[in-house]
Image (cartoon, rainbow, N blue to C red; front, side, top):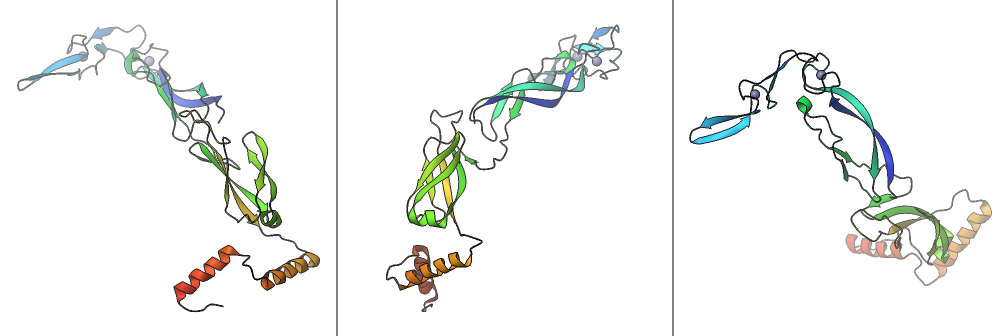
Length: 247
Ligand SMILES: [Zn+2]
Ligand SMILES: [Zn+2]
């Protein structure tokens, strides 16, 4: 999210130090390839067309080695590994690629090195799930606060904030905290933090607390109002579905 410089260690092919990358044993002569006269390219006639292609005898190097380097078997490269510092820009996401020019594998026969592409995989976070520029988090809220309304603590990337939960909040309700998401590498404004609350059923109740809930239940049953909107609408749907009265 904030960007950083990280160190990575990677396996790679590096230019052979013994032969300096040309693949010839030090001190042994390197001849010019007879087939292409050192050009590395040959022309072949195909019907009316004259096609240029890499020389098959020297693989395009234009040289002929008499004694291949023992260290690299004439390839000019050796298996190695290296540690690199990679500057990770703020807001990178899964699959983003960072190109490090010239940090790829050494070219054949002393040729120029290629580029290294570092592909980003973002590790899962304890609280937050990345969803584009938005972050998602699940936060529990106790039954009483959900019913009466109140403030709950919500984690953000920059520390705790207080979220006002309105009265009659149902489990699964999502609240949007604007600008508390991720500032991506591609856009100028940050995303939002989407907080989904799950209403928690109280546990370890003593007999007094159970009694209070039973009294509450009796009071709710006596009342003429519907106090469980999801249950009521579910029962209505179930009645229509089965075409009979359910008790
Ligand atoms: Zn070598
Ligand atoms: Zn050749």
